[in-house]
Image (tube, rainbow, N blue to C red; front, top):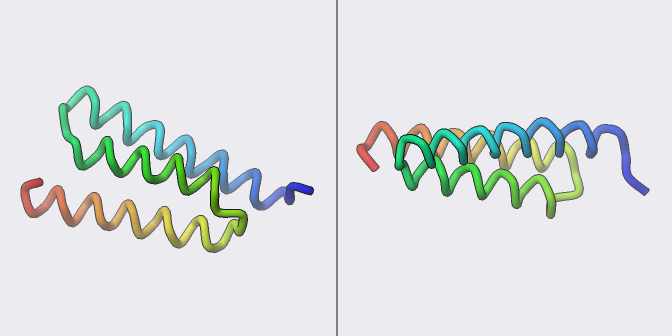
Length: 71
């Protein structure tokens, strides 16, 4: 039922998302917290490893862009 690539991608992106969430909580940055929650949710609900990676990389780019703009 589950492919190895999906499980590995979920583990990686879920862990990165959890790290973003913890970082955002400690720094009181709602942008990083929202990005972390979004990555965790994406790792649960997107079943393709490639699409999951693209979405999570987009979330990382969005968080970086928003942080550079001061949000």
